Every structure is written in C-alpha cells, then in structure tokens.
Image 1 (cartoon, rainbow, N blue to C red):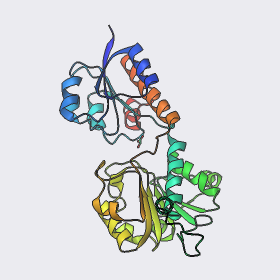
Image 2 (cartoon, rainbow, N blue to C red):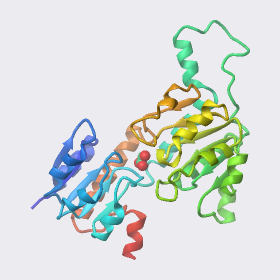
Image 3 (spheres, protein in one colour):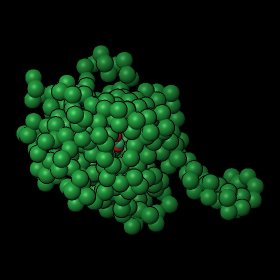
Image 4 (cartoon, rainbow, N blue to C red):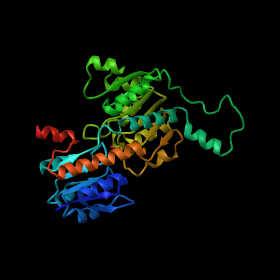
Length: 326
Ligand code: GLV
C-alpha cells in the first residue's frame, strides 16, 4: 500500500516526480497558499504533509490527521509549525538546512549594496529618461567598503554573510546567544560584541536569527534607535524580528539612512508607511529563490518525507527533535 501525502502547494517537477514514485500525492492548490480549512479537509487520511513557510500548521491541523507520521517543511525556518505539539505527538518535523545558505547570503549582499548605493531609485530615474548627463551630486550613496558590519545571529547564513564582508575589507562584529571559540572567530574574521555595543558601532546591521519567543521584536523601537545615526538595517530572516512600525518611523525621521527587507511582520502585507519611503528596498521574500537552490530544497523536503513514511529517521530532523530522541 502506498502512503498518502498532502502537499500544500505544487513544488518543482523533479521533486513532484520523486514523491509520486514513493506515495499517493494530493496537492491542495497549485497557485496560491491554501486556506486552513482546505488543509484540514484534505489531511484527514494522510500519513505525510509537505508544507511551505506560508502554511501555519497548528494544533487543529495536526489533530485533524490521526495517521500523520511526518511534517516536512520546505524551508530552513520552521516557526510556521507548532513543532512542540507535533513532537509531543511523536510526529517527525523536518526542514531544509544548509542548502540555501549561500543563496540567502548573496541576496543579503544584494540588499546591502542596493540600499547603500540607491540602486532601485537610480534605475527608476534612468528608465524615466531623467538622466541628463553626469552630475557631481547625483545619487550620492554610502560607501560599503571598509565600513563596520554588525551581524545579528552568526549561524550558517550569518557566517556566509561575514565571509563576503571580508572581501569588502569590513570590520565584522557579531552578536549571537552563543559566542564562538576565539579560534573560530579568528578563522572567520569576526569579533563578538554585546548587542547594544554592536548596535551603536555598526554602519550596517544584518539579521540572521530564527524567529522564536526570544527573537520576536528583538529589534524593538529602543534598539532601532540605539543604532548609529545614518546606519542601514537589513533583514532576510523573519519579519517579526523587527518592530516594523518603529523601523518605518526611524527611516522617516532620518535616524536611519535606509533599510533592505525581504521579510515582513504581517507577510505578505507590507506596512503601508514602508511602501511610501524611498530609502527602503523591499523584496517579496526571495532569499532562497534561485532555480538551483529551490530544486535542492524541494528534493530535500521530498526525501525527508519519504524517509519518515518508510519508518527511517529522516535526515533533516529539526534541532528540537534531535534533543528529544537522544
Ligand atoms: C526561507 O525563508 C526559509 O526559511 O527557507
């Protein structure tokens, strides 16, 4: 008998084919994120669920699937799943770590440079045929080379961002709840700073922490205003880590030079004031969006799902599961 699995959205064809070879597959919806009631309706007789970061998998959904063995999230972040509850019911939860690190670090750097050099604004200006010749005062941005970057969260992606910063001869500070060994700090070229000192010292701050109870609004109003005047704030992690309203205020009153955001507090909604400000570059959550990386993510999520269904311990169990099983 083939296992029955539910996919909340259609994923890349290769991964769909792989899954179809291993299970009976039902897709909630091809083009948009399904509503909760659609998932509840379709998950009843399923043993596996492959979901995306846009799907909130809560207790009610989990309780609607009495045969559920595994929830495979096609994302590295898994704050969208009530994983504590899933673990309490002995349901595997997996994610897709490692493979999107470099792609997300690249996008972080694209945002840093876009904000500092006002690339989207300059592009719009040129397209509107407003370029009338070289102008000594046109689009005067900020240097990135040789500045100080503050990395909040030095996990896989934070380290990949740090590695790129050394190519810009930057001083690289970081804050994380765990300080690295001095030897490792030296090899990456980073220095630990307490969060408040880092906020005061860095010209560019970039966030790479997961979203959880401790990191919700980590960048509170107070901390945003602790940042150096004229600094830049970048976020490619999760929107809820920043108090978006306070960020918009700090951009509007000129405390910050600019911001680059790939994620939002009430995604996919973007805080209205941010939409009206020129000094912020806004992207539609595309940190991992290259064909190569999305293919790897989809295949990893599909393989995790198949392993869980076949009774093997899936390769990419979330960290919280690893501590339970040991
Ligand atoms: C993207 O945001 C992810 O968590 O994979």
